[in-house]
Amino acid sequence: MDSIDQPIDDYYQCDKHQLHILRAIALDSLGRSAEALRDWEKCVEFAVETFPPVDETTIALRVQLALCARSLVNEESIVKMEQAKKNKKRKKEQENGGCRVMDVDVDVEKIARENAKEA
Image 1 (cartoon, one colour):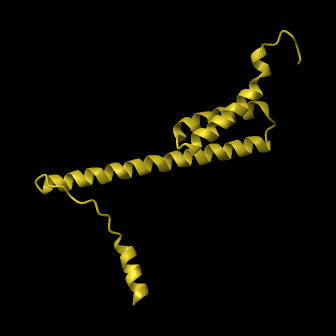
Image 2 (cartoon, rainbow, N blue to C red):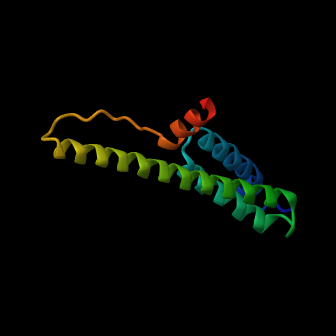
Image 3 (cartoon, helix red, strand yellow):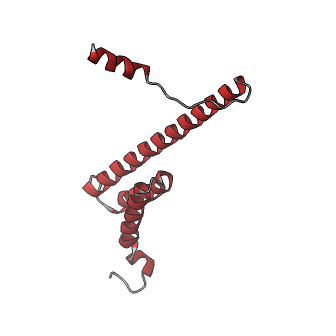
């Protein structure tokens, strides 16, 4: 402890940093990447302000931040693809006079490859 006058909150910054890391890991594991991303950003910010310029902790945190951001982009694209599939199905139902349309995804290329193997 440097000084008795120093705010107590300053003494616990490393603990808060570790808790942000744990929370980010947990949120990331639960697939809540948007929330985890905010914690990873706080971790990187703290590390940049606190640790030496090329500290391995800062590098590791930046990698985690990048992976989380990439995961978030992937999650958003999956959601968009699912929404597009639903919209396509609704459009087909409207074209068929409101009749339900079976949702069948046929991978033509996969079938062609399997047929080629059998031949």
